[in-house]
Image 1 (cartoon, one colour):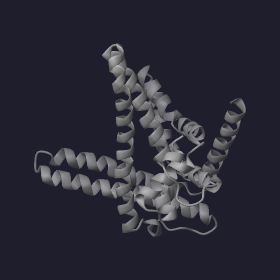
Image 2 (cartoon, helix red, strand yellow):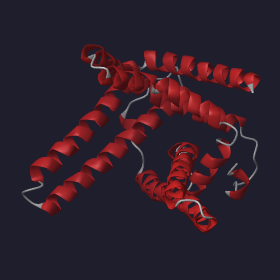
Image 3 (cartoon, rainbow, N blue to C red):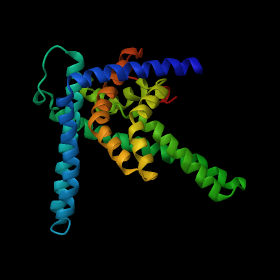
Length: 262
């Protein structure tokens, strides 16, 4: 176990070092796309707030427009990073990385599958827990255990299939196929991904901690650092992690779900 963690940590370090190098060389373009995502997200909330008492239909329509715009920028960011990784010497324009209509549609359908998979995992856990009602154990204890296991299972499922957009953008796969490939390539890599997420999310956790103990200045500085450095770095790191997992994947043909769950 110790050797495995050492190898995992080394792999995570390798990903972060390469991600930092790519982010540093192309910081302004990557940060610009991240900033556009931030502006779009906040503008959507403001627009919904101002229009909620005017026209609910218009408010819903504008929210949908902003959501689509946000996802388009997000996918453009990942496509831009792919271009940087594939051709580091050639200058890449952001406009050329805008996803195609087919990729956007596949991403949205894939998101629907994504939500159904997570909800399905939680439902299965609850159904498995149901027979324990007849064992005489208090219902409250069974419910708490089932909910806790369900949340853990949902988190693991979320991590394992969350790479599906990369397969749509990089391999032009169909939505459900991208879910299956994400599940297959993350098999055996969950600990590495979790370590990477913990390292990348450490600044956010520290920000919450210092906010909780009433140190607002430090919390604010960490929040600024996270917004301008960690967010762009995270996008690049996850893209590099995807490429590394794909390069190490040895499967042949389209993977099935049952053989890649564990």
